[in-house]
Image 1 (cartoon, rainbow, N blue to C red):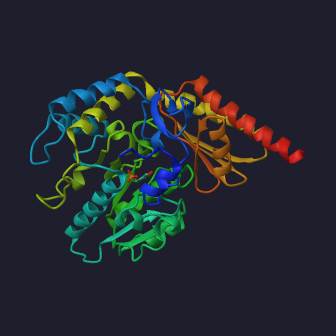
Image 2: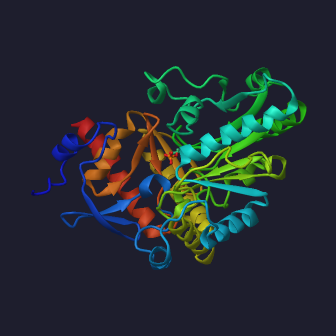
Image 3: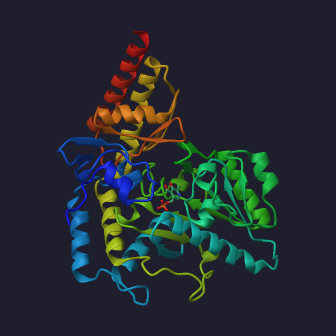
Length: 403
Ligand SMILES: Cc1ncc(COP(=O)(O)O)c(C=O)c1O
């Protein structure tokens, strides 16, 4: 049987229609460039939706993966495996926290954190202490618990009923926070920088008040660092920038160096929350993914990629401000390391389509926000190529309007 060609027609034939894919068949990548099947090179400002921190073709990552794959690809958590131990130790050293649980995806890390929160809250003799809260405009994933914490109606509509005992606090709204938390609160989930929500950072007064209320009502703060973590915002964990002192931290996306891996890291307070058999997953902490994750974290440190995220991110911000002064289509720019949101005056999909025609890949999120999540390895010159392209697109649009 001849295999189907890799085209949009075959895609429609083969798959459920849940992904709005770009009409681009990718064969490989080099640095921050993706190459399509006709040999065209695309500057990649999406990085596998914030996954490919090292870009494409990093030899250390490939060597770590192949060396581990030759030895052992899977054995399950019935056994102890060195790559898991090494990665867990690394994460505990970096965070100063106490325990690690490995899963496979961001949403699974969130599910585990929801379960841990409720189990922990069960200790205090209040059967109502089950409430798990999140912040408006957030995104935590697609499985039932994570989806129930997620704000956007388009991710939720038609899938109701959602998980009982969940609720939402208005983002950065201290009065609403004070109103919503109580003795019945088990946990509050936060993204320090909301990614899917359009790159918005939690305010310092909000975090400070959240921490005070945690003392008053005895609940957990869970930091979802799935998109903003692993160095993207200039520090390994984004929550250290606002001193959030979370009890649980969720990591995923770049954690497995491109292989499926997520982690929940917990403080001493929750260290003994899980008993044998109370939670688990067959694949979680796969040794090849853990070896890749370790190589990825070591490379981030060896190559000073957190500093690069900060300096190139600041450069993009400064240059985008110059573009905003010329082009009224740019409404606002928000930048935290290499997590950048550009609010535009129409659907961001329009600009993403124009950029694709010019062989630059940018992501549209939150309707009118162009989101840039390039590899942390991006150089100033490569960033400039993206800025020049956006400048061209905005100039051409103005010229077309004036015709
Ligand atoms: C902040 C945040 N949390 C959770 C998730 C869900 O992760 P996954 O898609 O790996 O399930 C994402 C994915 O975009 C995310 O950005």
